[in-house]
Image (cartoon, rainbow, N blue to C red; front, top):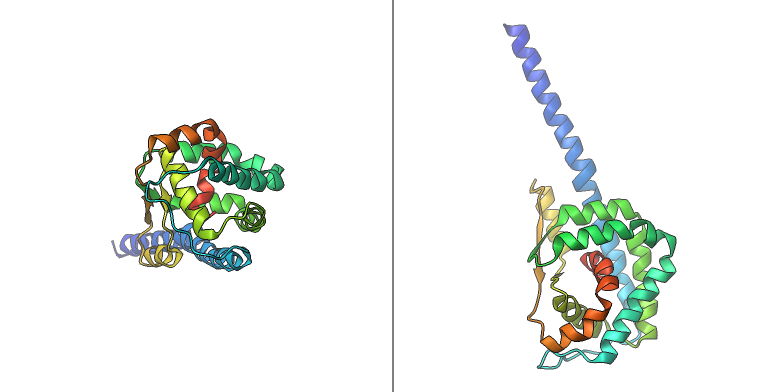
Length: 211
């Protein structure tokens, strides 16, 4: 009896050890790496030339020029990533389709994408900064346009706090969730954005990393 009890205890401890290892390998360590990369992503914002404040229009209406500049930024990032983007494009579309209409993001999904893409997100940020400068976007204007564009497509954009995500995971909340902000979309914005739906949707998961 004692022998079986000892074997049972050993098995239980082994299970706990494997569970802890899996949690660290697949959630905590990727989240820590993600936070470190977020810090590098945020640091690149200082290279954006236009640092002036942006006051959004009270109407919430996008201008055709803003939409076209926004689309050109995303196209530039995708084109310069080339085959690296193409290899994950089907996965990006799948993830985007799962999130349409949602108001929260299960951040395990973002961590999975982050692991699959490796340095893709960090490299994409550098390319984005170059494109923002070419299109004369400030960070504030781009963030507002991004929010309005995706709201017009039925998507919310996260207000990211990487340290909070890491805190949740470290506290063994292995299903961290992030709220998605989705303002009311004027019909005029929907009409402006709709012709670009497919390419904007495929890029949508990049917004989970502040791009």
